[in-house]
Image 1 (tube, rainbow, N blue to C red):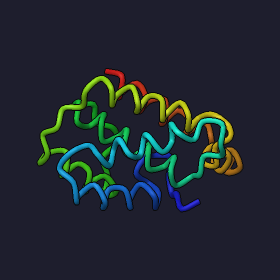
Image 2: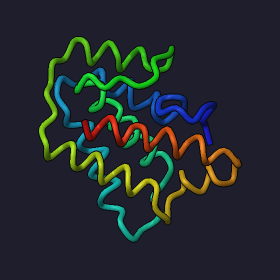
Image 3: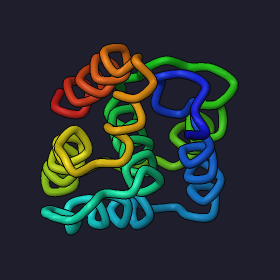
Length: 136
């Protein structure tokens, strides 16, 4: 797992998502990330897809003014959020919540990886905090 912390952007896949986000001025890439995860119901959810959906949910939370941890890995997204004034609607927020819930359900590679690391409690707490910030 290319993660160095339980925070949403502290992994390779989320950093890649941040870079991809810079090429957009809307929420299409964010919604695509949610759709991939939502459509995996019943199938094995790959870790990169789950990590991208978590990063996408962070984008929504930030667009709503519900900022999470800010660090060197969030700078790209934080800058994008400040420049692109997009208001998430209820439909995309509901997709974000579905994607978050799906990431925390088996079969989920990302959940498996965090369980194997022995640090799943910190990660699950961070994901649940994100869920609360998306709901506000």
